[in-house]
Length: 386
Image (cartoon, rainbow, N blue to C red):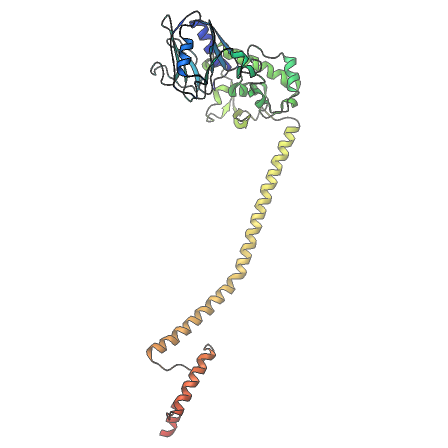
């Protein structure tokens, strides 16, 4: 999102081109997600006829002081940006309105025309910005809740060192906390930590005095230089991490590999070779990794053991299964043979071991019936012929 240098560049552009001029026309978008707490018509009528006396900023928030309240305030969100027609105003890297687009842009949320014909527009492509109309912007949230501005109100180094010693939080998360220091966002935090050689997850209170002083110096240098060039990244020093942190595809800065982790709830670029966790944190991370490796190994060994046990059980059951299969197959064959005999009108075969007791008794009863009826059994007939 736009950070202190980008918002400061917009403030300076308004200060240079718009002060002392009267607003003759204003148009606010029908977008309650961005135009917050006021109707577009009320917003427009509150600005028309007013003169712009000053452009003010704290952290990532900008507001215009008019010759009478209420005053329009702009919280830039992720892609908010100020454009002045015919004036080059630095755009945030991911803000998204091209100079060749229609004017005012279709993403314009507030459009203002001044009495000399100059036009400016506040745009927001992704609609996370907030535009408000406030009687006293500094006395109410979000501006009243901000910490010291990182450019104009940065703590003195001794105060900064003392403050960090009391913070039991990862340093990257602390730098992103706008109630602690306002104006620092993701890319500035990554840059100053890289230049100070501090790991983003290092607990603030564990930093040495030397590291705290280095961090303080890097914050001053990075922010002041970025502001001096109106946040134009083409003028940032080539050795800055900024040029290599976008998109994860570049991989290295000054020959050192860049890695990405989540710190302070944001994707964070850092250089592991230069930004190492120190003290107890380093030992805790090492032990944590060791436990994870052992856990993975034990899990793997258990899986192999269970697999081996299953294979052994299957090998024991396999012969029994085959024998059962053969027995079942043999019984079916014998039964089929008996059924075929019955279908063809053939005499039943002699009882065999495979024949049931019931089948044997049925055959015996049939023979007795034939004897009683005077019919000789086959052996008797053969004896009479002799």
